[in-house]
Length: 484
Image 1: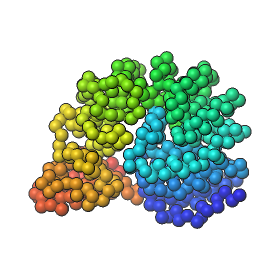
Image 2: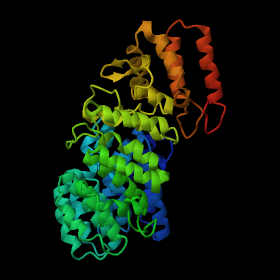
Image 3: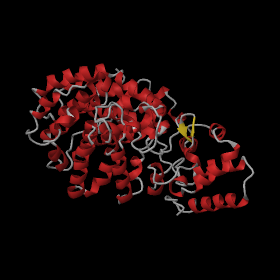
Image 4: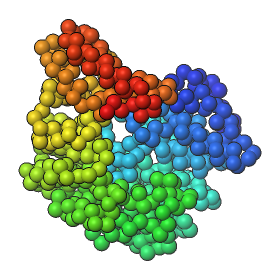
């Protein structure tokens, strides 16, 4: 079998990525078959960088990733392939996409079904199509291949029933079970198999890193039974990084924090969650902001009932709102940390859309404007709901070129245009953040959108001059063009 058959037939140069890596993909595939292990290893790392968006929503990565999945799957499953382990890990990363942080916390992929992640779902479906080749790798003689296969299966919730059977079958004879134990926790959560928490608990005293992986797997599978495992999970593994364990690059301590947050969210108990906040404040100050911003609001339901959705703002109690406001006022953290505190007044959105709509999708990141959404400040013109979402949502989409300028402009009436632009001008921190194009930071697209919006209407010269000054400041600061 020619493992690279068809790679050269793809026009990889047609994929426009800001990193510029797409044209190198054929060469990287060839290096995966090099006689030298070091060359193969470096090529696998570079290919992952070319295909997987690890931060933010990058549509171009999904498009090139979708094209590459069949070739990656072939290299991951063919017996003669010398790179099955790294390609299995790459399949897992492609399946999880840039939503991996959410999945690490145990949220089901089905919850992340906002229309914006459609291309990512296509990539995920392509990886699912390769599952028949992934499952047999759990029985391979190479421990690295087995661990990598378990990692790939962890991100395929639709295949959880098959994965559970295969993982359980292999556990009895597995000499390095950490990856399988952690994967079992993920797929147990996806399948609603809380009973597998007992299987995982039986391994919590195993030698590191298996024991710690079993603790995290048990939290994923059965969050209601997390109380006696919480401290162990927060303490982290004996070694901070475990080589050869694919999950989070082996940084299991950080992964444990994510999983604890997801588990405490799943319990939907504000009181129990606030106990965790107090514990974090005393013992884990470095990640207190994460606890507050990622976990308080899903735990704040007024009815305490189990809920499938990430967040339903209509069910947040007044008591919980007060706690959140107090936290927002008193939190000392970077501007990005409190953005998930935007929970108070987003009414009327379908739960499946909360993934993007519970915060201002990167448009308003500073504390002051989060306080507006918390009800501590009155709403502004950008908060008016149009076509099911606030105007700031559509403005952000126009900035990222996910809708056309005309689509954005059509949602703003003539009589409110100036007020909307002035409202946008009042939030300069993220409004004028540079968005990289072609690897550079020489443009500020959101300012461009506002300038075009202003140009479509007769505006006072003072307001136009203000935007010109802000643009000049923003573009004159190299790689970090903050205007203030």
